[in-house]
Length: 166
Image (cartoon, helix red, strand yellow):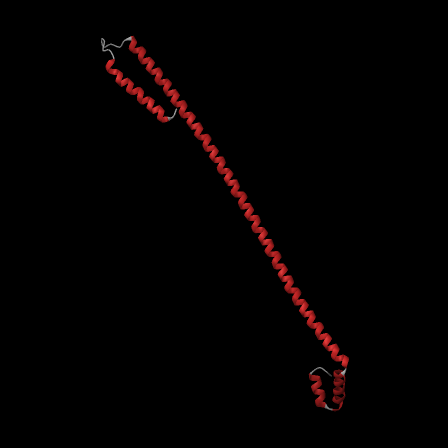
């Protein structure tokens, strides 16, 4: 029984007692054995009603406690799901950081390789150009001629020393 039904039942019992009051025999006005028996039966019924009501209230409390426990379990499950989602986001962020580090290192390696390649190519081109010039020998002959001239002319020696050719 629900609390509303219990209240209705109690209200009905009270009205039934009030409505039955005028039909009671006035008799001699003394408290008879039949009155005592009736009073005992009413008390017994009220005690039974009280016990039943207490029992129903206890059952309702237990039922509500069980439902609250179920709700708590559901909240715990939702909390676990959120923790799993947080962990997954953390893993994704870590993975993105790793990808960024790999991309950065690849970019730096590519730029470094391009710089090294250009530097070696320029040096190689310079060496090949010098070798080609020396191969013809005209520059070497010109420098040799100027060195011979510098033995007799101090102005030419001064200029060759200035350019580290003497």
